[in-house]
Image (cartoon, rainbow over all chains, first blue to last red; front, side):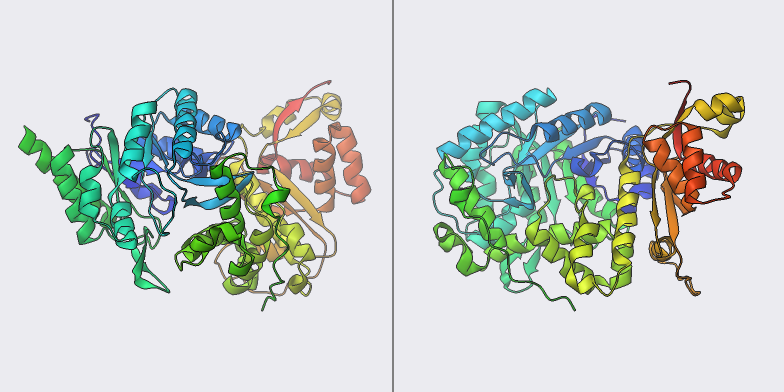
Length: 279
Length: 273
C-alpha cells in the first residue's frame, strides 16, 4: 500500500464495520478526536482497529485556537495522548474559536482578523505543534456574518500563520463556496489567492440553504453530496496546486457507505488524473 | 408541553475577568450574544446580531448541546418523546453549556436537573432513568481493565477470601432505587425493542458492567448494591457480606458472588491489605 493519501472519508460510527472491511487502495479515514478522548472502552478499540487497516486523520473542532487564551492544557494533553496512540497521518484544526472562559460552544465561531488576533493564533498554533511534536493543518472556516474590523484578507492571514509557525493549511473548498455566496465575493478569486504550497489536505462537503433564509444564506451543513459547483472549484484548485489528500465529509443524513465510497472515488479520479498528467 | 422559563439574567461582561484585548472583549460579547435575545445582547455587537445570519451561530450552538443531551439520554428520550426532551434540553443548555468539548460527557447532572424541572414533576421515575442513562455513558467510556475471573476467587481458602478486598471494575456502576422499578422502566426503554407486560411497582436495583467492550446490564437486589457499596468504600469481603445481609436479611451470598463475578463487576482482589 502506498503511503500517499489520496481520497479519504469522514468516519461515522454507523459505518465502522463497512469501513473496517473495506480494502480500497489509498482510502483513509478522518475522525474528530474529541469523540475518542475517553479513558478506554469500545470507541478506542474501534478506532485502533480501523487504524490497523487504514491511515487515520485527526480533525479537531475544539482547540479554540482563535480564542484570546492558550489552548486548554488538559485538552491538549488528551489530544497528544490520542495522537501517540493512533499515530495519525494528519492532524488538523480550525481557524476559529469555540471554548471561551471555560464554556464550550459547539460551533466554529468567527473573529476579526486583526494583527492582535494573528499574534495570538500563531502563538496558540506553535504551542499545539510543540505539544504534538508535529505540524498541524489549519482550516479556513465558513462565513455567515459581515464582520467589521478585519485587518487581513483570510488567504493572507493563513499564509502569514503558515510563515510564522510552519503550520500547514487545510483548504475546505465547500467552505470557500459557502462563504463566497454568503459574503458576496468570487470563490474562484479566493481559491486562486490561497497559498498552494502549505496545503496539506483538502475538504469537500455538501451544503444547504438556510431553512429560514433560503439561498440568501448557505449553511455548511455536511448533510448532502458535494455540489457540482464545489467539484468544479476543486478541479480548478488541483490543476493549480497539484494532488493533495482530499476528504469527503458527511456528518448528517448519512447515506450507505458504498454511496460515500463512490463520491470518494470521484475525488480520487481527479487526483489520479492530475498525477498522470504530471508523470 | 414544556413551559420554558424566562431567560436567566446573563452576566454582564464587566462582571467577568476584565478583558485585556479587543479580541477578548469581542469574545466576551459574542459569547453573551449567543445566549441572549437580540435586545439583551451586548450593544457592541448590534451590527452582528441584527444580521439574520447571527441565528446560524445561535442555532448551531444550541443544536450541538441539545443533540448531545438527546444522544446521552436515550431512555429518557424514548419515555418523553423528542419534542419534550429537546425542550427540556434547551432549558438545561441555556444555563449550562458544556464545560468540555467531549460531548459524551455533557449533561452529567441532567438527572438532578430533571428532579428540579417542574414539567417533570408528574414523571417521578425520570430522574432514576436519567441516572442509568448516565451510568451507561460512564461505563462505556471508562478505563479498560481485565475483569476478575471467578477462578481467582474459588482458588482461595474462605478465610483469606473474607479478609480480602474486591475492587469494582472501572466501568462498573450500580444503584438501588427504593419503591420505584427504575431498572425495568430503563431497560425496556434503552432499546427500540417493544416489551409488553405490566410493571410491578417495587424497589429495584441495577448493575451495569463492561466485561469485554460492550456495556451490559442486569437487575441487582438490595444485598448486591450494599455489597458493592462496601467494596467501593474499601471494606473487606466480610464487611461487604455483613452490609448485604443488613440490607436484605437472608440474602443468598453465594449466588450474589456468582452473579457479580459473571457480570465482570470486579477488576481485582487484594489480599491482606
